Length: 628
Picture 1 (spheres, rainbow, N blue to C red):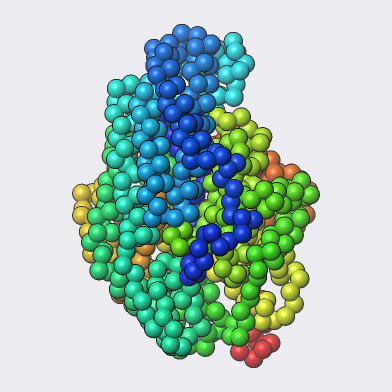
Picture 2: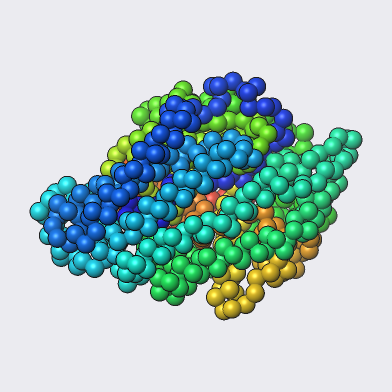
C-alpha cells in the first residue's frame, strides 16, 4: 500500500501466471513479426539508455540522507523527502521492468539476468539509506501528520501511505533495525530466484514417446500441452514421467521452499507479528479471518467440486476418474482453435458492456504493442501483466498457442492491464499501486465477460458443453485449486513456526494429504497416485508469501461484480471503472465495498457456488438431451 515509503521497494505491480502454459517453443524470436512482440523501447531505447538511466539514478541516492532527522520538523521537510523518495521509487519501477522483461524473453540469457540482479542490488542500497523514513514517520503522531497536511495541501496525496505507517507503527523498528532489514532483502529473494532458474532452465526434463510415435519433451510447456491429450495412455505416461523427474529432485525443491518459509518467518518475527500469515495480510490491512474463512468455505463446499469431477468423469466415459484425466478435453472431436487475430477480436468485443472508453484502451494495447504473444526458446512460461512502469503503460507476456484457454488468458491479462492503466492514469504515483488482494478482480472479471459473450452467441450443444466445462475448469483452477494451495501454504508455515522440519518428504506427504481431501480420493471421486503428491515442487506461487488465496477471493468478488454489470444494474459499470481507477487510495476491503462487494461476508463466495451449480445444471440438461 505505501509503496513510496516501504524500505523494500516492490517493483512489479502485478505478476500472474495463467493456468495455461506454453506449447513446444519451436520458433526463434527473430522469426516472429514485431507486431506480436512487446515494444520495450517505450521504456528505454536501448540497453545503453537503460544503463545511463540507472547510473543517473544512483548518483541521486545520497540526497535522501539530507532529510534524516528532519521529517518531523516541518510540513515542507516531510513533503520534500516524500517527493524525492517517490521519484526514486518510480524510476526503479521503470528500470526493473525493462531488465525483468528482457530477461523473460530468454531466461537463460545471463546478460539480462545480471541486469535484474544489478537493479535489485541498487534497490537494496537505496532502501538501506532510506530506512529512516518509515521509522521517523512512525514516531510522529497522527495529529501532527494531520497538522502538516493542513499546512501544506501538497501532502494530501501521501495521506494514505502516511496513515498506513501510523496503523502499523507497532511493527515498525528503529532506524538502525530498519536498515538491517533493508540489507537483509539481498538474501530474501534467493530461494525464489534459485527456483526460477532451476525449474525453468536447468531441470533435466524427460522425453517420452507418445502413442502416435512422436517424441514429446516434457518441459513445463510440454507438460501443459500433453497433459491435455485426448489419449488417456498418453496422459498417464506424461504424468508418470513428469512427476518422476520432480521426485528425483524433491530434496532440492524442499530445501528451496523451506528457505523461503524461513525468510517469511524472519520478517514476521522481527516485526513482532503473531505469524507469517498475520504479517503478510497486515500489509494490506486484511483480517486473517478472511483467509481462514476462505479455506473453511471451500472445505464446506467440496460437494460442489466433487459434483464437477463426477461430471468430468461422466463426460470422459471412464470408470474411474484419475488425476491425470483432469485436463483432458471432455467433448470428443471438438478442438476449438483461434488465431491470435481472432482472439483479439473476441477480447475487444467481450468488453463492450464496459463502454466504448474502456474498449478503446483495450484496442490501444494491441496497436501500441503492449503484448508479447508467442512462445520462443527460453521464454518464461505462463503469462503475466507488469504494470509498474507508471509513466509508460502496462505490458503483457503471453505464450499463445491458439486454444480457447489462451484466448481466456489474453482476456485475463488484459484485465490486469486495464486495472494498471486506469489506476496509473487516475491516481498520483503514491496511491497508484493497488494491492495484490484486488489484483485478480479485474482479470477474472474480464474472463467472465468473455465466457458470457461466447455462450450468448454459440448455440451448438457440443461447443456449449466445451465452453461451460471451461468455465467450470476456471472455477476449479481459481477457487478450489488456489484454495488448496492456500491451505498447503498455511500448513507449511504453521509447521515451521512450531519448529517442525520441512523436508521434501514432509512437504510431499502434507501436499498429498490435502490433494486427496480436495479431490475426494477416499470417497472414490478422483484417484490420486502417490507420485503426484510432489506437485508442490512445481508451483512458483509458493514463493510469493501468501499470494495464492487472493486468486480465490478475487474470483468470488469478480463473479459478484460481473453479475451486476451483465444484469445491467444501475451504476454497476461506473462503480467498476471507479474501482479499477482507485489504485491504492483506500484499503482493498473498503475499495471492494464501494464497488458493491463485501469480502468480509460469505455472499461473494455463495454467489460463486450458485453460478457454478447453475452451470452444472445446464451441462446435465444437455447431457440428458444427448442421451449421455
